Length: 111
Length: 114
Image (cartoon, rainbow over all chains, first blue to last red; front, side, top):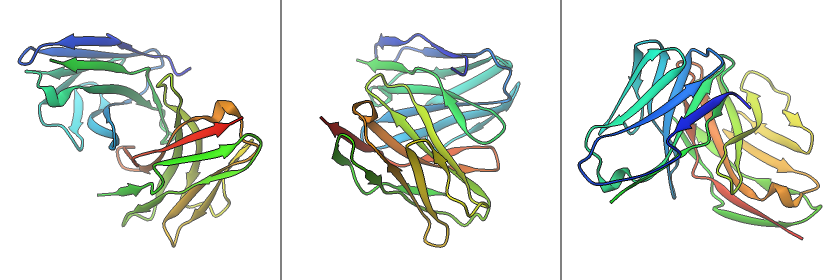
């Protein structure tokens, strides 16, 4: 257990509303990541962080923003949710030896 | 950009038998890492095994082993003595040394039959 929690675990929201997902770690790791998982696509990187206030875009960053004001928290925001953002979202931490450990995931449904 | 391909969307194996899952990747990097992750029905992503590209020796973790062929850009996972609890989606992932980012394949759904 890598000490990663995600909240909420499930969320249903309407198109056009803002949504924020939270990832929290207890182990003080520098690297944190947000992925989305969709059928037929595996996991795709949305954004990642390599330190407080240091973030960068991943493969599918359009429509998403992130913030990291503390080492332990990495927030993913959908400014105006769309149906195409219905997905399962995973947070991960990088331990410094290149492998990543994942949180339990958040299932987001945009109606 | 790296790409990872898993050509077997689904596989099945009888309990106690051996199964091999395939993965190929494309990269221009010389230093990198490769991983297999398991995702059971609980949806939790679990690291199964890792391989450093600079190591010629294939990684082994209990019943799980890999066949890493760097020149062929191939990274297969062998599961010996398959157990019912091995039923899961298996993802191959390429790890960059810069930024430690992972690129995943589309996954192989493995079913172990009693």
